[in-house]
Length: 312
Image 1 (cartoon, rainbow, N blue to C red):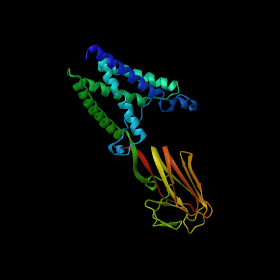
Image 2 (tube, rainbow, N blue to C red):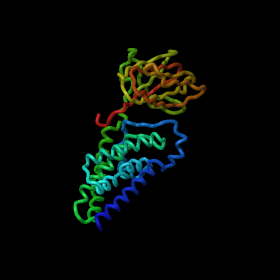
Image 3 (cartoon, helix red, strand yellow):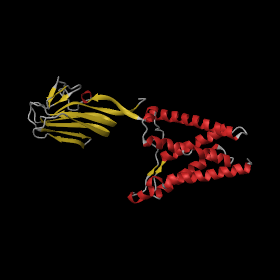
């Protein structure tokens, strides 16, 4: 086939594929119908999950978000192949112009309320284009077009798998998970009371035998007690509290949990109710923890788990 004819075909494919992508960016998924339901512009300038790709186990039961993540990368690979076929260009020039184009499209999406400006999409789309450019450079090295196309496809798959692996490593590095359980009585008690958080063998609540593992808080012989602990400005932690009224006691009392002066939990006993319960409280940051008990409410296995990076 004549070189001029090849160029026309490639140009036509590029125009068609560009219109296809623009349709998905601005019109697909009922975007136009949802415009009236959007109250304002959405701009997300800080990337937070662009490298979160599904693992091999996730692919056995894929979700819609798994396909979206791969689609944001794979859908833009052809641009990295088609554009260099049409115009001689360096990678730096190509990827710079591509990123500027994606930034413009994302801005138009946000301003027309047909989507949002999402830096995660910019990075994923640009990664796809970079893969395509790399596959083109490695693949188109002979005069045989079919061999070039086959080689480009193979290199595209290899580079995609390589990027998948890199993103997977980054995901492990920058993803936080719950750390080990820390019993609250292991912390410094600012009240100086050595009897707080003592452990006892068992409780019977709602006919169930409860076996505390870490600590038990109650106020035998008192009307009210406040326990105060210092958490040293820890960030992103989950506080766990098990509570209930033992069967042999009257159903009256309350629990109040405050952190740095803000109340996060307030529970009052219901008349005649003897059932064990648990609360899980997320604390963005915590310095002073105060737990106030009244009546016969009893706490056990009180502690927290801090969100930490896997490499910590």
